[in-house]
Amino acid sequence: MTDSPDRGSGSRQLQVETHGLDVIGDAERKGTPRTLFWPWFGANVSILGLSYGSFALGFGISFWQALAAGVIGIVFSFLLCGFVAVAGKRGSAPTMVLSRAAYGVRGNRLPSVVSWMLTVGWETVLTALATMATATVLDRLGWGGGTGTKVVALIVVGALVVVGGVMGFDLIMRLQTVITVVTGVLTVVYIGLVADHIHWSAVSAVPSGSAQEFIGALVFMMTGFGLGWVNAAADYSRYLPRDSSGRGVVGWTTFGASVAPLLLLVFGLLLAGSSTTLNTAIAADPIGALTTILPTWFLIPFAAVAVLGLVGGAVLDIYSSGLALLAAGLRVPRYLAALLDGVLMIAGSIYIVFLTDDFLGQFIGFLTTLGVPVAAWCGVMLADLALRRRDYDEADLFRPRGRYGDAEPLPLVLTLAATAIGWGLVTNTAAGWLEWQGYLLGPLGLGGKDGSWAYANLGVLAALALGFLGTLALGRGRVRTQEAGPPSRPLDVREVPGA
Image (cartoon, helix red, strand yellow):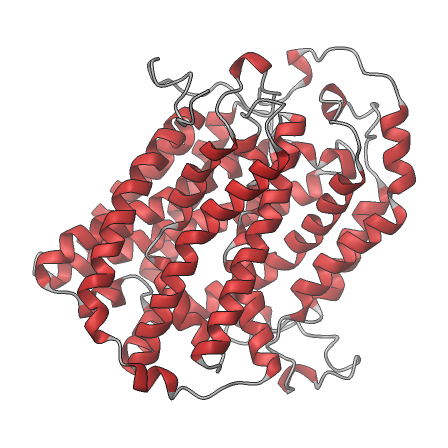
């Protein structure tokens, strides 16, 4: 068996994927767990990973603290993705269909809506960053970087993302392989060209921060990396054969997703710690600021690596956001859902590129706010998966009167309660529309919204723990009852909206 990500598809003509929420048949399953390396590496090799070094130091911590927070946050959060990906090969359906086993068929619409919002938000951010990076590069080259340039860049980037999302799985897998090779090589060249801008004396002089600031950076890394993908983690593993190694799925997902961000983070920390000017510039234009230390001749290759890396992530997001929208109840073909998300993505990108001047503050607020309910969902999903001894009954995932029920009270209550508690333990003062958060910091003796725990973002960790432990403690009987029943009748395609 070959490890090529195109096995079974490379010899046929590309066409729009017809699969939506439906189960992938055994005849269409292909590849091995190793093939998961390509989409996950390609989606996370973005130059944006360098900017996370600046974001981490922004919490007021030292290089070594930021490095520890990054390593733990990146690996742990992508490990969660790896565990969720196992559900894909056990159930053959998209992530937000598989979680119906925990929430019920229609009860699952709540986390599906949250998942959709998160993935649309991410694809919008990545598209906007690619647009701004292109404009910055062209401006440095003297080819214009004003409004007209940004409009053209947005059209080109948006078209690439939307076409990838509409075409579907086969094109995405081929595209991610190309992106992996091109961006990997050019990123190494970039690092070599700017290495002389690193000054260890300045980096090592950055003062240490408190434990609370370290935890805040750790949580930010989790929400910026793995927790931003966990709700889509099974969307690609569902195409693997049923007998694929579960450990292989976890390992290749985690490794593929983590290796590039870890390397980029280290170098990003060294660059940001060496120059306060660069560190400040990254907050306003996370990608474009990195061009200021490049020789002119490498600006075009840099634009290519920046745009391709961001497009790689955005394509995976728009594909999964379309699936989440179908799981939330929209009854249209998958490609139309992806197209609708593309329209929203373009509208959001216009706002970021042309109307706002505080990218970092809004970005952190967005990640943290949606990171809380997604963490709660993740905890429920992982505990539910851990309790199961049998594969999912795929047909009943689409039947409100099947073994998984219509709306299960326990996971819904746990998710809502964990979200309410989580939002009470996070603050986002840089985003004025989120000033209402942090309402539990005072009553719980954590110093209030101005105290030392205000920016630790404990709410994300609390939501994850409450969802997981609550389901593990109270959900065992429900899972055993579900698994005790006989197999259901075969699924009729008419029972699958968006198939």
